[in-house]
Length: 214
Length: 220
Image (cartoon, rainbow over all chains, first blue to last red; front, side, top):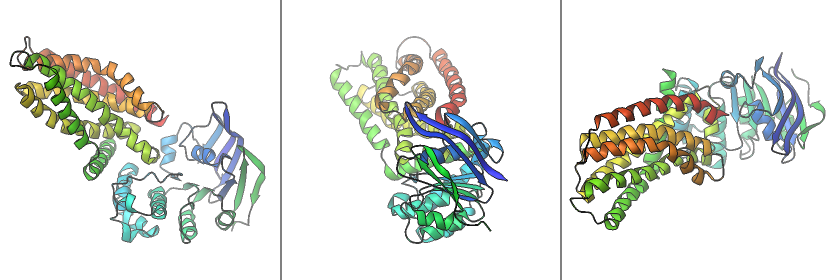
């Protein structure tokens, strides 16, 4: 069963074309890596798939729902890690997650579990602006899975992570459908079953299957 | 009920952040006191003209403090890239907006807690229940409108210029009726009942209108 079915996604920024007729099909439980150089359109594509942006044209269905109309319903089942962590610097790691528990309507008891998952249990009381960039990224990843989403959209989540970052990503992606944008081909090979390569807003070739899905 | 919980969580988050960083309120308090000092030197204040000049000075200081307070409400979210993270939850954008407006309004009330006694001190005017009521009622409407336009311009480059251009025309009714109520309460002629009633009407109108439009401003 397809979780994401996108047809001819196009995004224009004035006269610039960010995405040009991109088709994406992701099955349930599948992990898709989106590769491409800077400016290829990875972030634009991921923001559309996460419902953070609307495409200029094209169709997008996620879990069978029209993603341009049913955004709020879909956001309850999508976890998004954007380029910037988007944390509140004066709030502690725990307070940041507790705040998002209220927004997601999730029990605050989940916070301890998530802090443990992302390896920040010992830094839970530290303000977000006193955390290292890598720890901030871990916190942003924790926030994205706080509500136990079925679909994860990860925009270069490995950018600031240390050597344990790949293991963390493997843990949070396990059991979920995921779309991961990265420059790290080795990471894509380890975590994803298929790759989609973008160049200047267009898909290059056909999506490649990296290994057999078990 | 969930929308109320979201709005309160957003407001608590903003107030906690302000309490810990103390970025806005001390600066605003200094600003309003300085504005009063300058007005005190600029006008030849005496017992006869103080009730006529003080309301104008009060609203000028309040309007400019409000522009700064409401502008910061969404500028901080933009700088931290956190507004999108909030909107990526199933929480209602109207509830998020209400929380932001509530926090910004309360920060302006804190500023008013400095402004009003300072005004009474510098201008020797009475600080009555009617004066406080008029200022608080105007703050509600000014907060929702100010935050709506602050959210609208947060993503554009010339936001510092655009915010007053968009907001001030719609704040004029609050300044007119609030000014009228304060003028009367400070010794002018007429009654405050009508002006306060109109301020309540304006508050209801703009709270409803901004709640309906917040979704389109924040999320589209």
